[in-house]
Each structure stands twice: as C-alpha cells, then as structure tokens.
Length: 207
Image: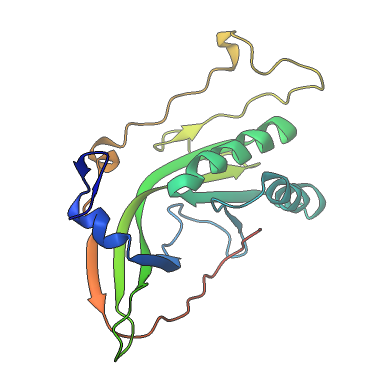
C-alpha cells in the first residue's frame, strides 16, 4: 500500500487511482407530477450547464411560445444550479405556482483501467451511485396547494428592487424534510471485461 505524508492511502482510493472515468449516464425516471401535458418542457440541468443558456431557452418557451408549465430537474452537483434557475424565472415572470419534489436517482459510471493486461481487453469498473435529485414544476395555472412541496406565487420584482433584503415578507415555505433520503447510499460496483459502450440520454438538454 502506497504511503503519502506518513499516512497510508485507503485501499479503495489506491485502486481507483489506476482507473479513469470514461462514461456517465443517469437513470431515466418519470416526472413525479401527475396530469402533466404530454408536451411539457423539461429542462435537464447538468453540472456543466450554463445558466444563461438554460434561462434563454426556458424564458423563450414561457414568454414567446406561451407555455403554461415548465419543469426543471437536476441531480448531484447540479441541484444547486437547478434551484438557481427556478428562482431566476420566478423573479422575472412572477405569479408562478411551484411544486418541488426531492428523490434519489441512480447514476452509472464506467471506469477503465489505465494499466490493462498485456494480453486481453482492458478491465472496466461499473459503479452505480444513488445521488440526490430534485424536480421543480413551475406553472402559470393554479396547482393543488395541499400537495407536498407546494409554494404559492410570489409577486413579480420590479427592476432595481432589492430581492435579497432581510425582510420576512418574501420568505418562502421551507421544503419538507426528506428524512432518511439524504443519508449516504451504498455504492454498487461491478467488474467486467467488456469494452466500453456508449449511451444516450433522452429529454431536452441545454449545454
């Protein structure tokens, strides 16, 4: 076992240093909102997505194309960026009803060995990770106020208005606690000798 600074590295970390991540794909899950129109726009926010690009597309859908509802979704490190996009749209449009759902989804990572055997294919590790995911529905039309995660509309902020003040007038209802869903989940690792594959992700994505 390799040592650094007088401390031995964990065995799992030492082994993963010999691998590099070659592919990541997310589990496809239906949206957790009933009675959505079949053509509802879902903005799938990724860790590397640019907020400006996301908002330009989303605002065009709501203002130019007259959409009544839109969904923002993201998982893992993209959760914070997803919430930021929602808050920007609520400030710009105003009068939007909101429902927030928190859950977990599975992300599959494929890691390829950087030291393949001299004879035979490279060894791959397939890692299944359960990561936190958030889905937020924004609607111009009224939604059921009794459902979990509902937030009533907020007034539209005028230009130059301080939206970050300490007043309690603009405070939103806190999200319901996800209980044990925020606890760390165990990883499932599978070792295979098959060559790496390719994957596609369905849905509306903006770089």
